[in-house]
Image (cartoon, rainbow, N blue to C red):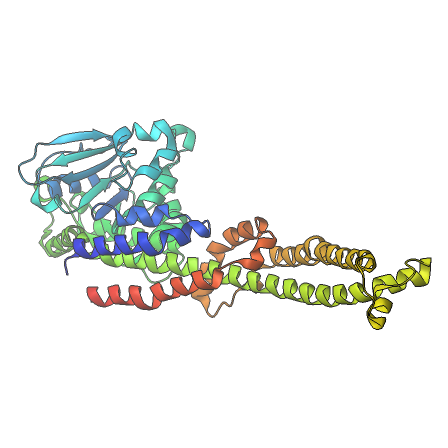
Length: 448
């Protein structure tokens, strides 16, 4: 089955079966919805002289992005192609963030300053018909949100969630020392993209004067990556250069294969698309399942105290019906004949009912007040303080999921009322489990 066809089937089934449940549990459906839209994407990030725009021009087959040693372009630019024969054109960010058929509507929240630095360029290139490349502004060593006018890292985070491949590029002369690069690798990308979707590349190696210079730059980059990732094992770093601008006296032919491999990974991004969707879907539906599990447990506990209160209230009401009149006569001398006495002699009349009815009403009111003002609020307070006790965390994966959903569960509990007793969370969870155990497995099998 073609990736596009499978993506459309996934989109239809998710919207039909899962979107109402995301809304039910106040889970943000926008990230998942955005991933299901449009075409595969590759995000290029790196410092301003890392060769991003040069790589884009090479892949696009036309000099569409300005290049240079100094910052030349401070916009997020999406490069893609329409069907062959279409004219080159540029679409402004204001159009992109308001087009519901595109996955960029959430970026509108970053404000006008960002929107004015966001655009799409369409070129005639068959390689880009079924994919898009996102060229980003160069990362800097010292910059604040005020300098840019928008939260650069937040934008990178959202685009990384959408991207099927993130290529992090380095300059041999600035091998990983940029402050924003550190933030991206250490904090932003781990939350937004899995390690399998991140590719590292050191470009412009032709600008090294000699092999020892190249070795020193590569070693520096490896050391910096180990510091930024906090890991001893260094991921593969593609060494590459632009052949048309090669000025090196070194023989760069050994790295031709590295260049071809990097370009192949980028151009094969459409093949990663369905895997990316399934990974995101798997994680977010498991988060939804954990949320529904917590609320199902809470609803079950609420029903328990509701049932116990009802049972106690019913027994008390029955006793009150028969004995209220007798107790009133014992303590206050009225009525002259209680309902129980009248019942025993078989002379019950409507005049004997006011005290039994009053007794039932009082006990029912007390039971309701006990449930609504004491036992249910106490239960609610208990689980607001310790929501983790509502779920069964079997492994580290569940622990990580719970870390993400716990704030949402707390909000759901804070909004809970006595109607939680009648919650249909078990039925909702059955639908979620059915999707995870049947539908999701079906799609995984189709892409193998």
